[in-house]
Picture 1 (cartoon, helix red, strand yellow):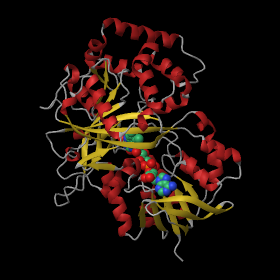
Picture 2 (picture 1 turned 120 degrees about the vertical axis):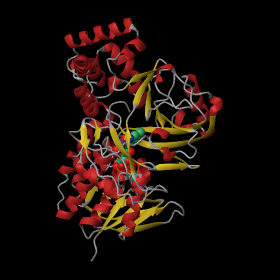
Picture 3 (picture 1 turned 45 degrees about the vertical axis):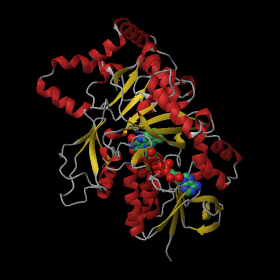
Picture 4 (picture 1 turned 135 degrees about the horizontal axis):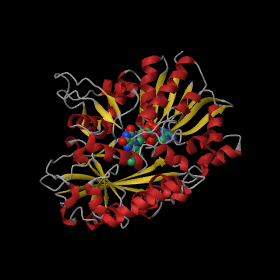
Length: 522
Ligand SMILES: Cc1cc2nc3c(=O)[nH]c(=O)nc-3n(C[C@H](O)[C@H](O)[C@H](O)COP(=O)(O)OP(=O)(O)OC[C@H]3O[C@@H](n4cnc5c(N)ncnc54)[C@H](O)[C@@H]3O)c2cc1C
């Protein structure tokens, strides 16, 4: 008899699990997706022909398995220079698609440019000890930064318990307050004193003042060639990006799963799970359009739903597990898409296009007088995301909590508010806004504070259910990028293939790594 795996969620984790099951086992996948499209947070929204990426998704992984997997689905566009891709010091070579392949179903190689916007000026990101940084900050301010850094090295905070301690010790008080405090608090909505130092160690370990100083001092002594080679590998970062946004990747995978006979039900939700002690028997699936429900028996359950929801549906005998899971914190997210005719040229932005658009993929908005966190310029991710190449398609990202003032603001008011913020910091004139839309993303960030400290107890309990595999970003309450979600799904399929119920390899996927989603900047 055919064995089946019910997969809750058709985001990167769920879709990877489905395709890997089909490639490597005889287990039949049934994907249940609450949304009306696949891709989860990595979907692409099509708004009147302009495509919006919820967050700006770089496709680059330290895992060769992931890099190759993506390229099997969408090859790199024919004719692309086969230069190696480099991201955060890691390289990956690729073979562009043959000239005869479909030019629409490809990935592009993009160069990363993202800067910090602060005091109405552009700063390099990561911060460089460059002429521009000094002239933006002024000599006195720079001297104060230097002195406070030296002081923090001489008298570091011990023990280092909070994110504030971590950032103070690493950058000094002045730099911490200038570039980290407000931004981190914007992203997480809690003071840096309430976030654990462990989070900083995981997210910001690649950034350090001493490395920046060494880099700045070494530069004049490098021969021209060496220095260019150095630039090639360490500073110019290139990543892959599907021509029509990240959702294109996941739509292709969903189509392939269905071609191979897998089932996909959109606008359906797993609402209840039936188990016999430590074994899942079936799940109740609700049709979100007509409200009807049906019970689907399964041999395996792969869950990418948020852990709090999973625990609620499993009704753990241990009330403490239920309490901790129910109290896990999240940070929610809103993106406003604004279509503008032009942007206002700013002196420090460097080369601009004819309509004033800077070259950045995204910009960290450090200004304390606005709530805006990051600004995406979708034209610079892929020109194909934008319907009219003479317009600029922007994504204004706001970090918030579900139900708060920002979240509850009606869409029209939100678009007005977002445009006014961008005008206030000098990047557009409001009269140049042509159109706008708003997308709310609940639980965009699984947060690492509050009850997160007790998550081990929840994990241990979930691991005891033999045929349950909790994978993915919210599925594991882990700050995963797409690649980590995919690798966790791969490990789940390894277990299913080998008949193992040892889940330890799942939790190891993202435990040690430094990665690229936001690098401590949200
Ligand atoms: C702002 C931002 C920027 C990012 N940038 C990058 C980047 O540059 N590179 C990168 O690789 N990653 C990036 N990421 C991370 C990436 O979006 C996630 O890692 C990835 O989407 C996680 O995939 P997932 O399948 O684990 O979860 P999700 O994408 O959350 O998918 C889960 C799916 O499950 C569905 N679901 C939930 N509950 C149920 C239920 N009960 N029944 C049925 N369906 C259900 C949801 O509707 C959703 O579609 C970014 C994320 C954010 C928020």
